[in-house]
Amino acid sequence: MKTLLKKLTETASPSGYESAIREVIRAEISSLSTNIKVDALGNLIVTMGKKTDNGLRVMIAAHMDEIGVIVSYVEKTGLVRFSNLGTILPQYLAGSRVVFLNGARGVINHDLPDDLHKIMPLNKHFIDVGATSDKDCLLKIGDVGVIDRSFVDLGKRVSAKSMDDRVACAVMIETMKKIKNNPHELVFVFSTQEEVQCKGATTAAYEIEPDLGIALDVTPSLDILGIKMQVDLGKGPAIKVRDMGMLSDPRVVSWMESTAKKNKIAYQLEVLDVGTTDAKVMQISKAGLPSGALSIPCRYVHSPSEVVDMDDVQATVNLLSALLNNPISL
Ligand code: CO
Ligand code: ZN
Image (tube, rainbow, N blue to C red):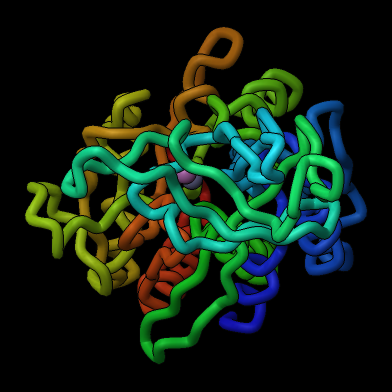
């Protein structure tokens, strides 16, 4: 599992440019289904099983895009100004390295601050690619890149960029390997452009017309920042009750809770005041459907070094497999 996580998190694929990560994932799952397609927005859609009389068509989504940067201006000095793909948090940027999809590398820093205690906004940051002027700069307007940071194994816990949401992609891949005979048609979607408003899951849900939707994503574990949200690392997957984009269907929440209890899997309940997941757009797709989400607790979400606990990752695989391998009555 750590090997898979390393492979997934070290791939550079920001929102809208998911082809590299899609091919890495496709290689992992190609033997698991004969029904694999890529839609117009680049979603990788893998169907397992056929819907029977007492089964449901379930859409399970984990987004494969990651936050990134996009060049907006190249200065005469060769320094590069940039904008964000998704929510880039400026407090984490200075000193970070960036790798661009065209192969260029650079380091991020910012203009001199007036006030040393203030976080510099994104538009005061620049990328230095080692150019001496705009003439020899390897970047042009529109080039995209991601934070350049390798995976590190800290033992029970591991750190990388883009744990959001590659850790959920890993959970989905491992769960797909554990799917046994069940009455459902399971449609696993490695979705695109989640970080820029859940665009891939929107079109995928429209096409798939699921009876039930489950998103897999990270949730911030702020247990060391003192913010009142009781999701901790190492205490199991969080069953989402609500976030800023959705109220989970209460029937889905209690189905997830009772399945966790029945299988003796530790879980937590999540009420989140920021962000949302692909479950938001599934819930209100077409005429609507019951939707919920499983969240993997993650520290320092949207930083270059996100941290997850391997026990939580494994427990999420266990809970999701238990949910999908049995008849579902909401
Ligand atoms: Co995110
Ligand atoms: Zn995410």
